[in-house]
Amino acid sequence: MTEIEDRLHLPPEAASAGVARRFVAASLHGCNVDLTLVSLLVSELVSNAVLHARTPLEVVVQSRGDYVRITVSDESPALPAMKAYAPDAVTGRGLTMVDTAAARWGVDELSSGKAVWFELPLAQAVSHR
Image 1 (tube, rainbow, N blue to C red):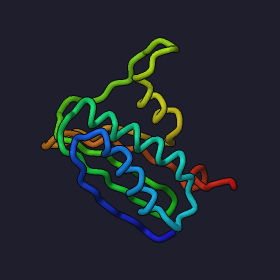
Image 2 (image 1 turned 30 degrees about the vertical axis):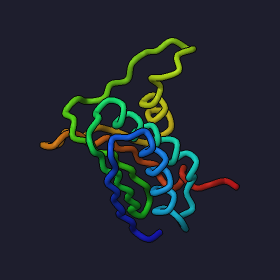
Image 3 (image 1 turned 90 degrees about the horizontal axis):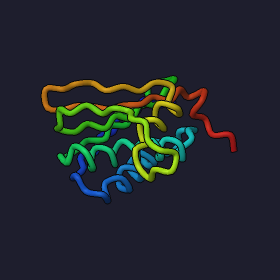
């Protein structure tokens, strides 16, 4: 697989999640990855940044041989935390979904805020169509 590193800056608006999904899909076009899963997870991270950070954000798509890594950075120093929600809650499951579906994920504290990222190894990310 060819190495990829694409970046997109977005405003803190609800529409940014859809823009991020399309950007990630275009960045990974031609890569045999499960774009449905990647799109779902990037939507969760961007939606969290829009809802909680309310600052401009950046989406970075990286492919390095055997994995795909998506990073969403914002300017808020507040770190995300997984919380327990009622089974019928309509919000609050984003990080749990990332934790369950991604091979690895984490949060990096930055001098200008934070970066939340996830990785999918290509062995798991390959589409089974």
